[in-house]
Image (tube, rainbow, N blue to C red; front, top):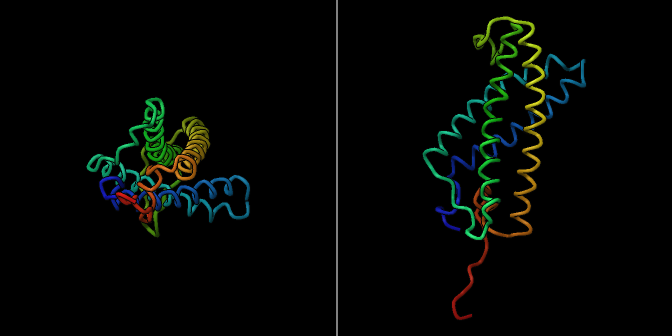
Length: 186
């Protein structure tokens, strides 16, 4: 596999870093709604991680605009190409929307978004209890949506890696493919 058929190193690093962070965020979110004892500690972790994911998603999007992803296999049907494109738009949209909705939700409730120590983000909406309630529900719905899209993404990645055995999974894998090239005349 050549570098032209792989995502560039920053894209791979951002992908796997964000995968771990988003998985952690989803688990923290579930724990927040099920554990009153640890709620404050979980929220204190959830808020800055959300902003970090927002920043990394912006970097990732900028990298993708500068460096086109490797082409999909030519034999992939058109509907699968469209589904891949659409699912990536949905993933990027959710990676940007969830933290922004969370920040807006907290702003509407006048809860500070504390990043670390005295570093606090400014509110992005005026205080409004009704807006807070709507955004809180939207944040939950978007989180479930992200979880579903991630499961589909994982399923398709495994399909490419284990069944189709094409180069789609290897293009984003953090390791280099060790496939042996067929020898001519053998």
